[in-house]
Figure 1 (cartoon, rainbow, N blue to C red):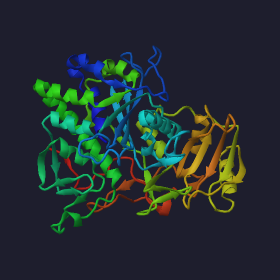
Figure 2 (spheres, rainbow, N blue to C red):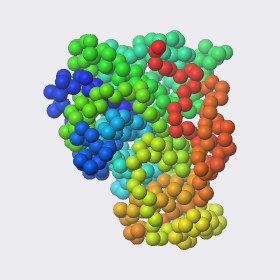
Figure 3 (spheres, one colour):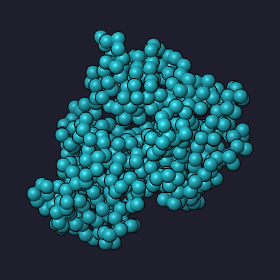
Figure 4 (cartoon, rainbow, N blue to C red):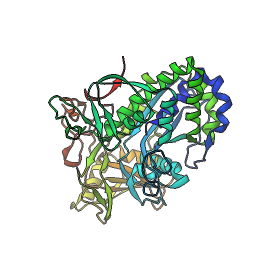
Length: 486
C-alpha cells in the first residue's frame, strides 16, 4: 500500500518534530535482511553529508489480510503481497529525495528457494513469512540491479490508523468514484474530508469506475479506469503528499494529534536495525525536505495476455506486466544516476533460444556481435509460454557485465542471478519480445480524452506484446482523478 511511502516520508520530512519523536524510537520493531547492501559515509565521498551516505530505502506495503480489520478471513487470505513497491533515494549532499515505483504485476525471476516458485509477479516475493522483506529485496537487486540499503514495511491497519489519528485528510474529487473491490464510494464532488477507512479504500483502489458525463445512475455501470494498478501508483503518491502535509501542519499545532499519529506510525512498522540506528540523523538532515517537490518515477511496463491469465511453465500467474528495455534502465538512472555499477564487458556471451522462433538465438547473437559483444549461439530451451521475457543470466559478482549486455537489448528483458553461469560470462535466454537494436530514447506518451489510456505521438520503436505503447515513467492522471485541495 501507499502507506509505506507515508511512513518513510513522514519520518524523513518531519525533522522539526524530532525532539518529540526521539524518545519513542526504541519501540520500533526491527527484522534483519541479509540481502541489504551495506554502505557507509566516507570523508572523501562527495555525495556523503551529515554523516550519511546516499541510500535507497525500500518501502513495502504488505497487503496481508491476516489479523487486519475488516479485510477478509485470515485463514483464506493468509499470504503476504507487496501491494505497492517504492524505493526512496536520499541524497544527503543535496538534501533531495526521489521516488521510484515498481508495478506489482511485473513478471520476474524469484530468488533461489522462494516458496512461490522460480518465476512470479514481483509482489509475490514478499510471501515468505518473516523473510518476506529480505526475499523482496533480493528480487529487486538481482532482477533490476538496484542496491537496497534499508527497508520499511507497513500493513493495512497502519494507513487507516495514521489518517484517523490526524482527524482525516482533505482530497478534491472532480468526479464521483466507485470501486467494488476496495469498497470505495465517493458520492459527491469537490474537496472533502476522508476518514481513515475511506483513505485506505482510495489507496487500495485499482478497479476504479468514474461518473463520466452521461453515465447511468448505477455506479457499477460507470466507465472503468483503463490503467488499473498504474493509476493507483499515481494516486498513492498523491495521498502520500497530502498525508505528510497534513501531519506537519496538524502535528505542529496539536500535541494530542501528534502523539496519536506517532503512535500509529511507530507501532505499525517494521524496519531493519541499520535504519533504526540512522533515523535520528536522517530526520535531522532532511528536516527541510518538501515531499511535494520530490521526483516520482515508475518503471515502464506493458500488459501481457489482456483479460486472460498468463501461464508460465504450466503455472497460472494471472494478469502480468512485462519489463520494457531500454526504458526501464533509463528510468532507474534518471531516478538515481549512481544506481548501477560502471559498465564491464563479459569475456563471453552465450545466447540460447527461449521461444519456438527458428534461428532466434543466431539472430540475437549476430546483433550482439555487431555491437561489439563476444556472443556465440547456444541451444534451444524448453519454451515455457507463448510470450516470454528475455532473461539475462549472470553469476554472483557479474551484475555489471549483465547490465552491459542488457544495454544492447530492447524489449522485454530482465536480469537473473544464476550461480551455474561461469564467472565473467553472461547467458542470454532470448525471449519472444526482443531486439538487439535499442532506440535512442523511448516513446514519449501523451494523454487523449478523459479516462483513456495514454497514447504516444511517437511510433513505438521497441518490441512489445501486441505492439503496445509502454506505460509512461511519469504519473498519468486523468481529469476525473482526485487531487489535493487548493
